[in-house]
Amino acid sequence: MNKPAICGGKAVREEKLFYGHQYIDDADIQAVVDVLKSDYLTCGPKIGELEQKLCDLTGAKYAVVCSNGTAALHIAALAAGVGEGDEVITTPITFAASANCALYCGAKPVFADINPETYNIDPAKVAELTTEKTKAVVAVDFTGQSVELDRLMAHCKENNLVLIEDGAHVIGTSYDGRMNGSIADMTTFSFHPVKTITGGEGGAVLTNNEEYYKKLLLYRAHGITRDASLMEKEVHGPWYYEQIDLGFNYRMTDMQAALIISQMDKLPLFSERRKEIVKAYDEAFKELPQIFVQKEIPESDTTRHLYILRIVPEKLTIDRKQFFDALAAENICCNVHYIPTYYFPYYEKLGYGKGLCPEAERLYDEMLTLPLYYGMTDKDVADVIEAVTKIATYFAK
Image (cartoon, rainbow, N blue to C red):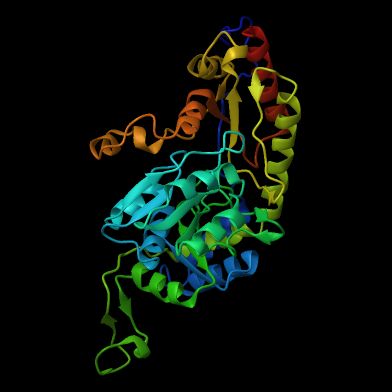
């Protein structure tokens, strides 16, 4: 029996609709089965095939795939030379890995505030926080909208910094006519199940810099090489290899690579559908004074990973938590992306605290993440719009 919703009457939906869900078809399943029946389950031919496919998609010269998006950020920071005593500037509105990658290297994360309209890191704030200790900037393409790459790259070049684009959300997006992944010094991808394409898990680093590429290969696989030109001792035979640096076991399996390759074939469809849903949401919500619609920079042709609903508190009699609960009562099950990283107890113990980034903190208090994924039907989209509209008007001031 459908329980009465908070706004009164029956809920908009009988079944729950969640904020994200992977789409797996028979071709994806067959791609994985084919690998399972092959000679290689890891370190096999699908790794190189995926890396080439990522280069073909983005225009980057090199791609190094790895076990997940966090591993991608870690090896990118290592390749950039981030180390003890350095500072790395990033945004607080992101998953913790964007800052943690600096800590892994012994460096200090520095949090720059966001643009309150786009929700991406503000290049002006990055400039204000840059010091002699700054080594790199980790700029997150939040929701899938590209960061202002031209401004960030100019600043990094002027100050001899490495720009790492955390592109966990951005695959399928282009910036000023160029695909994200081919522009920054290094760009990282994630293939977690809620992302636009998935491998169950998986990550990648893309770059045009050969020196970074060689380092990324080493850090991905224990610091071990079979490249004779890199070895320090005499090669004893075809079995011989050397560890020449301290790396990690961040390798991807061929099963994951095969799934991602198959998913990439559907990227144009995934991108088109996500754009359709975002357009429907934007057109509906821009008519509601109780809702602020995220702004997009003209340079970004965005494949959106997340759709952020931002309430206007002065226009409502309820807060974000109550709005969240009201949507749940309508069987629209949302999420919140993200809790500011420096709110976490671990970061508080490091000396961080509230007040560092006022715009980011205000966004956190006012946002929630609506359902957005390829498998949503038109009725699903209409149900979300109906539920949001119902709540916003019912609790309007």
